[in-house]
Figure (tube, rainbow, N blue to C red):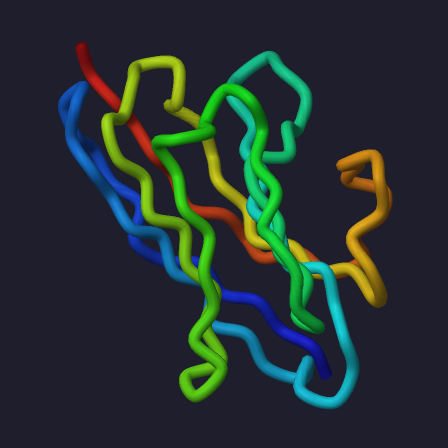
Length: 125
């Protein structure tokens, strides 16, 4: 069965960095769109970054472009989100997600059928 397990969240001051990891299993034999979402209290879930396992250029939300980098280590079956120059508005629960097939034009949570449990990121000013 497919499984996603996030780690690496924590508390950091503004301007700092964190690297989130998503250990994934059960996704080896098909192509998926792998993504990071986040959800702040009282807000909807927002797509942050995504990458297609079949190749191509990663895609980022405008709010994180130039600061966040999504990457994969196939040997370790792990998805990463390197977050630099963090801001208080980046504070949220961060979720790893996977959707079967391509990354579709609109970055919607409904395109993703597999989700991790989330890891909390808190950025203080």
